[in-house]
Image (tube, rainbow, N blue to C red; front, side, top):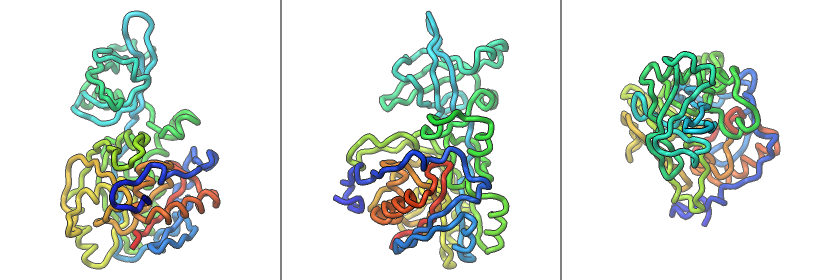
Length: 367
């Protein structure tokens, strides 16, 4: 079977490729819109460009769709409190369940039990009991998720997380260097507005105020949707049969105003260009069989693989993704697996920078 086979029998190994470690970007381009951009035409032709070339690649009447989610400082270091010496643990918050409850991926998860108390923050923080960021392990799931019930609630909890947490850099960056204050700006888009993500919609990191002005002058409209990206985006696909993989649900919102605007743009001959796989996945969750986008508010766990029929997006701006990842599978579905493998081979040979802080690609949907 080939990855284009719509039967769902694609294999994980179909989406593998070799990436030299020196292609993994540890910092973004400076300035942000100075990154490179590989354009992949609908017929598979490849062109080396720059993000700054984007206005010339779009037409007046086209629409860019951004994800305006804002990343929270979701990585927390703490200590499991039992009788005897405490055990150092780390939590990456995943999804908010209530004003005081979060699901999280924790290390070392196997050493935690339901009912365990976790004290997050540094030892010096304990001087002020009112500022303590403590939680109880409320539940453990088979997939490694832990439900944490915090002692703080609502805005108090949000403030404590912002003060104690670190930006949740992806593992391929965090294992090579520690997060720092610079990441609090670098790992946030220009238009980040609605707090709730634990991973950045990284294609949006390339956009600057100057580039947005040039796009507006070109006659390209901009629209914003919200998808709160969960830590599950970094989890590896473990099933060899791709169709057996299950995505984690993420909350998204498409307003009636945005849905109507995009439908009008499409009816007038404009093209919908999604900035990032998150905005694309959300629009594809909000589109009907007739191609009309409808308002949407709720969770989506849409898993897009080759064979999927796209209804909402005409083009996709996205970074270069990990081998064997759901994001690379989505890119293969959009432009064709053979085309994307050739594009990634070209990008590696040409020195493009990969992953969250890396360069971009402009993909036009394959015919």
